[in-house]
Length: 356
Figure 1 (cartoon, rainbow, N blue to C red):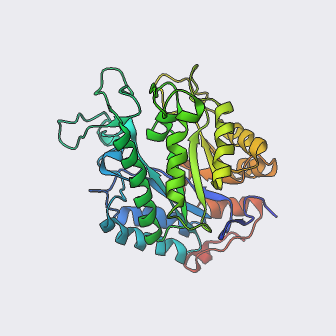
Figure 2: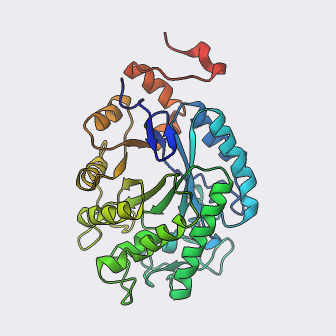
C-alpha cells in the first residue's frame, strides 16, 4: 500500500490519507468574513481528495491580520460562513483544520497584487502593528509598538477565544502559527526579540509566549482533537533561531500535548539566503521527528507523488503539507493516487473521469 494514501489517526481524528492542504492566504475576505471564494477554494480541495484541509492564516484579532483581506475569527459573526465551509469539506470526506495567527510586525500590509507594501497606521486600511520589540521588519518602515504585559495577555485571550469559535465553526484541527516572522516567531527569534523581561533573552523566555498560548488554547480545545504548531525551524541567518532550538522547542510542545510540528523555515529576516530546491525543508521535519518522536509535517516545494511517497517511506515526516502544487491542481491527490497505484474514492459526479 502507498504510504501517501494510508490513513493516519491523530487522537480521535482519522485522515483518509497523508496529503494536507497547507494554509495559504487568499487575501479575499472583507472585515475578516469568509465568502464563496473560500468555500470554492477549500471545498474544491476536499472534492480533489486531500486528507486534511487547513484554512489560511486566520486573524485572532483585527490587528493580527497580515492584510485587510485576511480571514478573521475575532467575532462570533465570522462563524456562520466558516461552518458552511467545514460542512462541505466533511461531506466530501476530508477533515477541516484552521491556522490561528497573529502577524505581529508583519501586519497592516496591502494585498500582494497591489504591491504588498506596509500600510502606515494613519492611512486607509492600515493600523498600528505590535511586536516583542520596536524593530520593524524592513528598515525605513513604521516601527511596531512593543507589547506590554497587558498586550501579551490580550494576545493569549484572543487565541483562546478564536479556538472557541473554531470549534463552533466545525474545525477539528487547530494549527497555531508560530512561523514565517509573524508574532510568535518574532518572540522566538533573538533577531526580533530584544526584550529584557521574562519574554526575552533566554531560550525559556523566548518560547514563553508560544507555550502560554498553547496552554491557553488547550483550556478550551477538546482533549481528543488534534493541536498542531507551525514553526520556522531556522531563520537561515547567523545569530537567529536554529534547528537545535527547534528540536528543544518541539520536545517542550510535545510534553504540553501538541500533536504535530509543521516544520517550515524562514520569514523573519528579509535578507535571509534560503537555498530553494525541491523538498528543501524536509530535513527539518525529519530532525524534529527523529530527535523527539513527535509527529511532523513536511512542507516546501513538494510537487510530485513520488517525492511525497519517498519522504514518508523514509520516515522523514508523517504528513505531506502541499501548497503551490494544490493551487495549480486542486485534484492533485486523485492524480497522485493513480500514479502510485493506490485506490482513492472519487466524488460520484467525477467517477466517469477515473483512469482505468
